[in-house]
Length: 280
Ligand SMILES: Cc1ncc(COP(=O)(O)O)c(C=O)c1O
Image 1 (tube, rainbow, N blue to C red):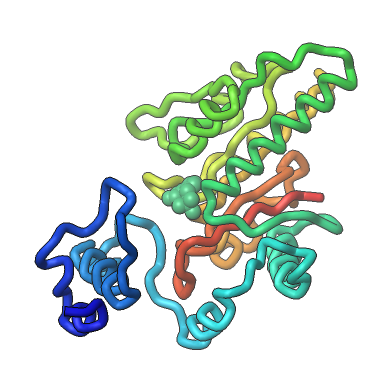
Image 2 (cartoon, rainbow, N blue to C red; image 1 turned 30 degrees about the vertical axis):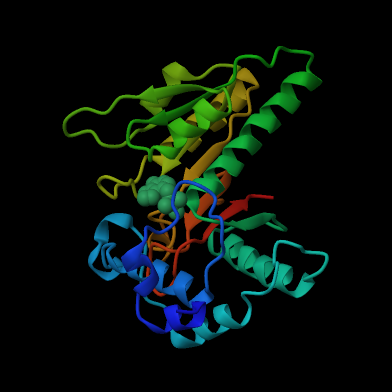
């Protein structure tokens, strides 16, 4: 049989010999074979629509599907080559900054999800702290970050990957969020920031962002330490502003300097997209 005869029979080739998985294959394979192989393998995975455990949504309007398909060939990360794509991203950033009450001109970016946005936001906390310390001629070798045990695992990963000491406020039965009284004992001159969660992964609660902001403003005044808050709004920042527009958790609070939100957790958006928005 020729290669194209082979391809004409559904699944034929890999019913009779193993699909390449370990070693680099001696020969190529027909596009149809490759397509069927991957198709059949993926069919054995769970059906995304029946899997609530991944926290992402599974349906998008046909118009969006069409746009995505029509632009798959675009290397949109190359902003110089594709300035309109970059501008569309920035329009979203500006609209989100407005939704989160940024006081003026802002910066931000699209990411693959909140995990990436958190890595970038937390790196910014670390670098800004380092800049402040270097400018004052102080040591920069022992940064720490304060968060509660209610955070998503990505925060612990950040600390491990980027050599930051995690100062984790433990949770207890009936206590699933953190507030200023939990944060205060952990603060010092090496604290790069405090994380507050809006919509925790486990219970959907909000940390006391207002209380933590108040504490940090007080620390700024009395101890001359400017410690920023990053709000992890992965699972809440597209719900809270609409349910409770008057409740402050965002840039209306002075110490909140950056916010992340997942685009793909709320409906009508495929994975993966997240956002990182800076106060200024
Ligand atoms: C509070 C919180 N932060 C971060 C993440 C990670 O988000 P993503 O899956 O968009 O990377 C999640 C996901 O469940 C989350 O709930």
